[in-house]
Length: 466
Ligand SMILES: Cc1cc2nc3c(=O)[nH]c(=O)nc-3n(C[C@H](O)[C@H](O)[C@H](O)COP(=O)(O)OP(=O)(O)OC[C@H]3O[C@@H](n4cnc5c(N)ncnc54)[C@H](O)[C@@H]3O)c2cc1C
Image (tube, rainbow, N blue to C red; front, side, top):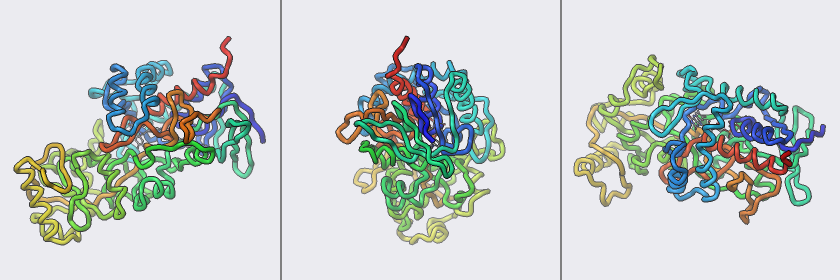
């Protein structure tokens, strides 16, 4: 089967629907395909909580502030960061124009589709992504765009020095799409164990998946085959999770352990600290994922931290399930003990090692200086006192931050930083905005929507306006 279009968009998450709709609105004839059998794709978008984070700043603030916030981590690419910063405010207007409801939440962030129901599982907010995509799909189809499910993009077609479409398959049947522009919006590679091993770390295959199983890095693979440049591949957005509360077939994105990480210490199997916990939960999860022993770490905290993480696990409106008591009720890997020796025994760690680590940490916290420590500790600290808690943890990968490098027009760049003619990318498939020492999260939705807008417009750029 051969299909022709002006613009082919591969992957129907929020980046794909955005790019497809924008290209359609700019006069192009657009085909959007997705490998899942669903009417709205099957990506991370369907799991989103809808917090429209823009690098911790307000999306309508001065773009210079947004740009500087992204560049501060030292791994972002200026042209892309500038385009993203210049278009965050416009992305909010565009969402509004698509009748997506938006509420102002805490300082710096907006919430999309805030009326949706909160749940304990399988995701925190059930219908945010579904609502958004339903609205975008309605508009796309009203404008004449075409959507095909169960069509998997396999490889890019290269001809006359440009990308001329995609070879795919629908079931057993081969399908060839010919297009003037092709946009890759296939999400990240968090569900591809081989890529996770190769790009994040050998032991990272032990990380839990906190996102969609459809994110198998297909766009990255296809783009690399035609000479694209990929950047920031070792970084991901994710959190520490309780080791035992999660199994592969039981998806629990919550509770989050952020506050316990901020107040506690993370130790390896030998009872030693190996990371500055003050860098934040996302950065700590990244560090742990890059170690060989990804499942051997424990988070140690105390009664005060546990009390601070408390709430009513069943009172889920409007809060996420609190770590306390949710973990105790759902997880056998959480130990509470009177003495450090008892805790060491429970965790299977050498008693004297753990005692030494805890004692030196407590002394440093007491004198408020970690100077001379092999592993620094930033942020506020205090000594940890009995009752002591130990929780075996593992990183959970929500989405990968790295991917194909695009410029400010969402054109995919090659290893010489030149655009590959006819090829664009957006959303979690790209790299160049996120990552860094402190986690470098600038917002998955904001990245997807802004780059989706840029990709849709640029991909339709050849259309002659009347
Ligand atoms: C639990 C969870 C909570 C989140 N909460 C937030 C939040 O509150 N705020 C925020 O900013 N971000 C959040 N995110 C991140 C955000 O959801 C993502 O960054 C964003 O949705 C990515 O959109 P995307 O379109 O790039 O990719 P996706 O939504 O993952 O879509 C990719 C699509 O491509 C399709 N596909 C893959 N390969 C192929 C192929 N070969 N051929 C055809 N189709 C293909 C897939 O089936 C899928 O439908 C959350 C993510 C998760 C998992």
